[in-house]
Length: 356
Image (cartoon, rainbow, N blue to C red):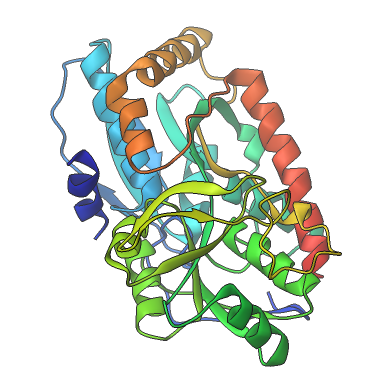
C-alpha cells in the first residue's frame, strides 16, 4: 500500500549523439536546461529544532525530491535538535542549485542533494568544455549516500531491445530521460555508440512523468529512468523494462503476466541482443547521489549530520521506503563517499570517450 500511495505522488552535438531542445523546463532528475532558478518551498510540520534546508535541484515529485522529503520526514521524527525542510531550486538540471549552494557562506547550515550526474557534467565541462560550469564540486562535502538507483531502459510493449538496436543502427532512436551528457545519456548513448548506432536526446520535459508520457505518446523510442519512475506502468503493462544498466540482472518488477527479470549489459545476465564481442562495462555508471554540507562547515554540524544520517538509514521508515520503490540500500559516509564520487567521475569520462 505504501508503494501505491507514494507512486501517486510522481504524477552536445557529437557524431554518435544529437540534441533536440523542446523548450525550457524546470529541472528534474534529468529533464531541464534553463539558466533561471525557480525556488519552491513546501511547508512542512516543524519539530521545533534549528532549521536545516535540504536544497533539491530537481522538481517536486521526482525521485530525488521524494528521497529528500522521505529523508527529512524520517530525520525529523528521530530527533529534535534540527528541523529539516526541503526546498526545490530548479534550473539547469541541478546546476542552478549547485551554483547557489557553492556560493553560500560555508557556515550556512544547508544541505544539498548532490547527484552523481551533476558531478559527471561538472567534470566533463571542466575537462572538455562541454558546457559552462559556474561551480566547483569541491565546495560540497558529502555527508553520505542517500540515493542509489539502477537506471532502466524502458520502451513500449510493441518494441523489443532487438528492434530498438536495429533502429538505432539504421536511422537512430530518440530517448527521454535527462539532458545531453546526463548520466542516463552517457550510459545509453555510449552503449548505442559501441553498437554502431546513434541516439537523439529529446530534452525539455518537466520531470519523469512527462518523460514517460513522451514515450507513451510516441515522441521518443525509449525512456531511461529509475525503477520507481515507471513501476506502476510496468505493472499495468503500458511500458516494459528491457535493459538494466547494472552488472547483475534486475529483479523486482511485476507485469500483468507476473514477475520478470530484466537483463543487464554485462556478466552472466547480459542481454543476448547485445554484441557478445563488446565489453559494455564502461556503460555502467553509479546513479543517485549524496547529501552534502559545505566544505569548511563547522565540524560539530557535520558530525551531527553524519550521526543523523546513520539513524535515518537504521529506520524502517527510510530503508523500508527505499526498498518499496526498488532503490538500493547503499551506504557510504564522509571520505568514503567522496572517493566513490571521484571514481564514478572517472568512469563517466570513459563513457564520454565512447560517445566522442
